[in-house]
Amino acid sequence: MRSDEVKQNAERAPHRSLFRAMGYTKEELDRPLIGVANPRSEIVPGHFHLNQLAEAVKAGIRIAGGTPVEFGTIGVCDGIAMGHAGMRYSLASREIIADECEIMAEAHRFDGMVFLPGCDKIIPGMLMAAARLDIPAVVVTGGPMLSYPTDDGKHLDLNSVFEAVGAYKAGKATEAELTYCEDNACPGCGSCSGMFTANSMACLSEAIGMALPGNGTIPAVYAERVRLAKQAGMQAVELVRRDIRPSQILTKTAFANALAVDMALGCSTNSVLHLTAIAREAGVNLNLDLINEISAKVPNLCRLAPSGPYHVEDLYRAGGVSAVIHELIENGYYDGSNQTVLGVSMKEAVEHAKIRNSTVIHSCKEPYSKTGGIAILKGNIAPDGAVVKRAAVLESMMRHTGTAKVFDSEEEAISAIYGMQIQSGDVVVIRYEGPKGGPGMREMLGPTSAIAGMGLDSTVALITDGRFSGASRGAAIGHVSPEAASGGNIGLLKTGDVIEIDIPAGTLNVRLSGAELEERKKSWQPPEPRVKTGYLARYARMVSSASEGAVVK
Image (cartoon, rainbow, N blue to C red; front, side, top):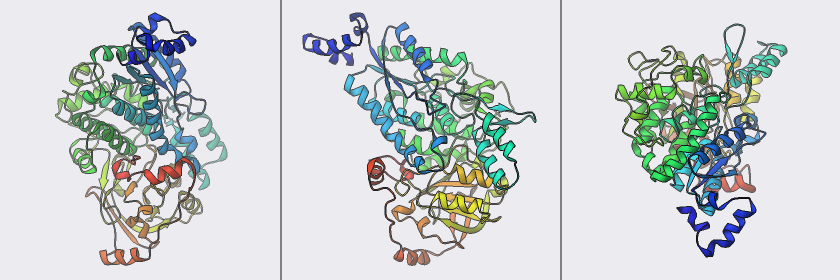
């Protein structure tokens, strides 16, 4: 065992003595040591309950004959970090989380790992670590939050609160209505209830084969989630015994499969960033052209919030991710031969799954749309690509031509939106918010929710070199690459320019000739860095383009 390096032979007596200081017995040290990465905290709703799940994971490890070794990691709540300088740390935290897990596993020679993430960047950060370490590993997430049913048959979620702010600012909602939404939209622990980033990545952890069936959709508060955590612990020990490693699971086929499920579910645009980053750690080349290729042929089968009225709990009751995968396998969109952490192929893992509610999960023969939920756009604004959640765009906004209103920060844009400076037909441009320029590539849920809450989402588009929350809806186009801070053409746009968006055609252009853009480039100067000290300054110096996953090189 790997762990023998810290516990076997006379030379390791000092090491064993340190284990003895924590109460470990000889019997425990004779077993595989399984690291349990637990980012539990009192600031993230999706992590608040993780101690209970960690105890279940450890119980499972002990049942299977292993010894659990729990340690903590950081985790940012994107919702609380949203709309201010704190959001700059969210994406940047992904790299630290991966590094933390690598350090703990390598320094202490764990034989295997159970990763216990809950929310947004923690899931991809831990998957990056799993790929990097390449020791037997299982991911089990904290589970989705429940939505809140209202008297009129609707369901509230976190996005409802953001949009309620916009409605309140526009005089379309009272203070009492805003307070009601605030008090009820997040009824308990778990990752926010729609197909936002955390739940997208939890579902894709399952789709790629690194999590057990049910991981993506079993609600956080269900006993079934506790049982799943125990099973994950047991399976981690089994993977060690069989020496099944992430490199056998995270293959090129697995990433193509994950993208197929991504398109079928209508996941967050952040999934593009994260899958690209995980693939890099796994030694797999995942480019934006492949994403568009898969999106063009895989039908969209689900419309979960913010794209539709359903939430992840509805997907759970309808058959979960397994049912979606089974449907995709049966119709030739998913290669079921790929290995999973169950130790069997995905086809075997989901052979008994079925769609239990065809209004929540459509069949491939009767999809919501014949193309996937995410699209990559290119053009003279984004030569290296931009990303849009096509499933969350109204049909009337699939093609849009409008006048640019250009802002150099999220705060400037929010002020203009709430100040009624945005008119029907406009294209809001928010730049210098990319991985380098932000720094940290902030999510623009505030602006998109303000636009939607004020009733402008059917006529106003937004483009940015930043990114969007999975809760964003409307013609919200992010990840524009190259970003403004790196000299990208989005930095050359001016208020009054005419922007042309054609999502079906995959294009994003400004009505300017190449010569005009080159002339503007002559007078462009890179701005002073917004952050000059600390981690974000280092991150800005080392981070790659969004088109490459915004990874630190």
